[in-house]
Image (cartoon, rainbow, N blue to C red; front, side):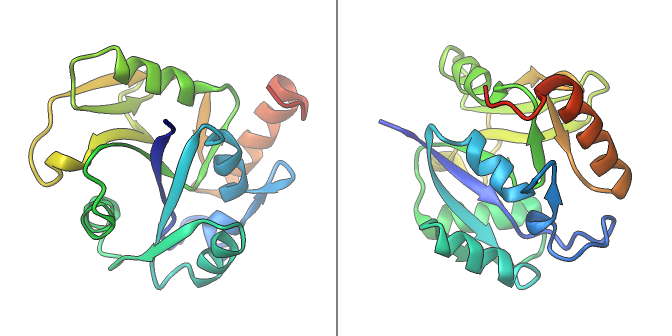
Length: 181
């Protein structure tokens, strides 16, 4: 059985200033394509907002089920999508503005499965969140016992600014060299 993944695609992308952030091309692909490639082991559904209509069209053309959420915020939209899709199981929640330089999602899923927690969050060494979580939809809206899985700065990059794009391309060219894992 494949793990279910909720792809969060609703942000406004104001800091980046290049239109719909999931569709911005970085390292030769749209950001959302980088994430979809990394979610090969999951059944993917996506949450979009009024801010991302072209992203919704693109995802639908790729055969991905899409739900339009309120756009009130990441957590609010995640909860809305989980409730409306009736996702009452563990769900891998991933932001659509990430570039993976190492296959960390398998490690994240493995860490969750081997724990007794009902939730997992990822964080960088400085404590900032990395945009990857596992939540149990059965308990959405309640506090969930979670573990924190640490990722390294060069494992995954959350792209928010033009500087992040430059950093992503530098890391991509030195660590990935355009090759698949």
